[in-house]
Length: 319
Image 1 (cartoon, rainbow, N blue to C red):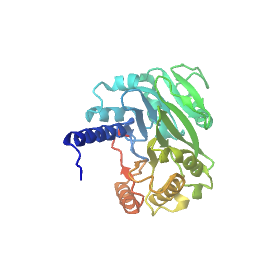
Image 2 (cartoon, rainbow, N blue to C red):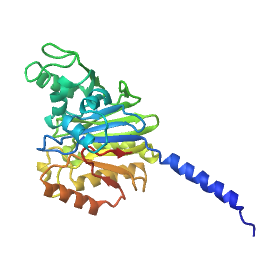
Image 3 (tube, rainbow, N blue to C red):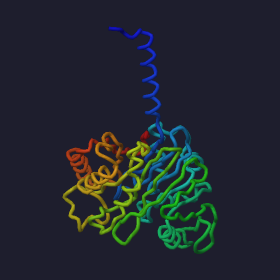
Image 4 (cartoon, rainbow, N blue to C red):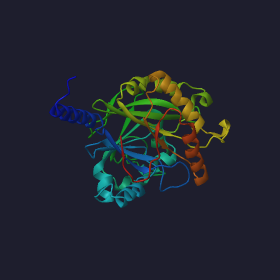
């Protein structure tokens, strides 16, 4: 019986290690500026996303901005000033829907911000123009809408299903509709950088409760990316524990509903494709006992082998 020369074994091990490192190379970095749904105005939905090698961030929703940046600086995630992160690192905002817990940070911080683009679907943009940046409730920092536009922000309307470049980044976005207290609209954003993707969902109810096919259509669209391991992770909400009755979900998910939806995604992408897949749980609503219960229920129901991640304000996540 012939044995491999030790040098060959060494070369094989080095080659395997290099291939493994290449496969595990990070694609995106996420810095949560706000992670909760509900009443904590210092910690509401906002997630900075950038290619792993850059600081060219797009902000996914904007419920909390300033307090989140300060928390990230406190945790050494950023080593520049709050103003510099706001003005230089954040290249634009993707707003999933116009509820205040997703836009209040954008509104309040607009006087201190630099010029950049705010992206939203037509209905969402109309709500922000008519109810917030309207020269009555707040100055119009946009380049269209009521009153006197100050033209600091460029308001760019996104078309559903159309891939749009994100200005001053190497990323693009494709939008998908979500149901959030039907007929109110929310949005999912599929972010692409090179051949890698990340998916962020704004608030959404399950198809069965919302009487829609929006999540089914979204899962169908991304299933090939899951199968090919191009999708690096999904940020998706779970607002209530399983005890919350369907009639009082108000367009949100429970652990039961999330797992049903993800089982459908696995059916579409292939058995075992979600094992170890990163699911970042967003929008958990206080009180603390509810958040604890949600985490316990998800742990018990995680029969897909998902890597469940609970974001912490200011702490970086790598995809």
